Amino acid sequence: MSNSKPDQLPEDLRQFDTLEAIIRRLHGPEGCPWDQEQTHESLRHHLLEESYELLEAIDSEQTDAIAEELGDVLLQVLMHAAIGERLGEFTFGDIYSGIATKLIARHPHVFAEEEAETAEDVRNSWEKLKQKERPNRSRLEGVPSTLPALAESQTIQGRAQRAGFDWPDIQGPLEKLSEEITELALADTKKEREEEFGDILFVIANIGAKMGIDSEQALRRANSKFRRRFGLLEQWATEQSLNLTEMEITALDQLWERAKASERAEL
Image (cartoon, rainbow, N blue to C red; front, side):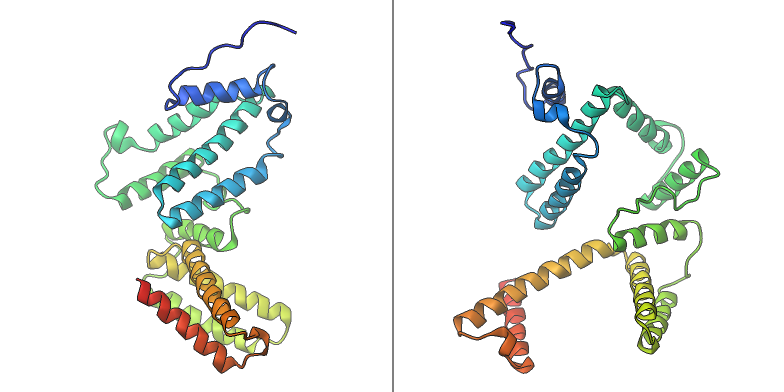
């Protein structure tokens, strides 16, 4: 066994170079056996999990939690970078160079002579530059099919809208929503009902985008609200020795309205 001491790590833990050095040590010849066995595939679920934990922290508006979860997501990125370097696929520098090149090229209003006065100007310029880089590529390519379905729907519709494929105002999708609800009510088979229900969700995502609403975020918040209120309902039922499955709908509705009122009183 070698008696040589490993290279000293930089002392400043607030610097990116220190974090990169730690990751390189973990994946180096005398590093961590677990880290050295990891692949892009084995870490896939960790990246997904950490991303959702970051979204939850953002929703909570707790800045300490956001900082911590950002660190966990960054760790996953650097782990994949180390794996790529260890396997000879790409290097840390390739990742940094790729994103830096893209940012410079797509911000000519900052790094070149073009002008963009509003955020909308920037979005339009970004889309034009992306299309110029890949002229024969569909605008919908690059939208991950692994996105949650509602987020995917809003993303692909957003790209189509920026290409001019859109209703001129909110009235169009609202009328379409009414039409789709009628079609769902008239559907005869399970397959037809599923198709019509999907069409309803698709139109709702479009309406959300037109109103500046992130559909996925809105639904997550609605889910969170339901969790809170249903938790109160269960708590009160337990305190009164009530069995939810045996209660009449009117009694359940009274507890639900009480939960809503309690939540509003706390605001």
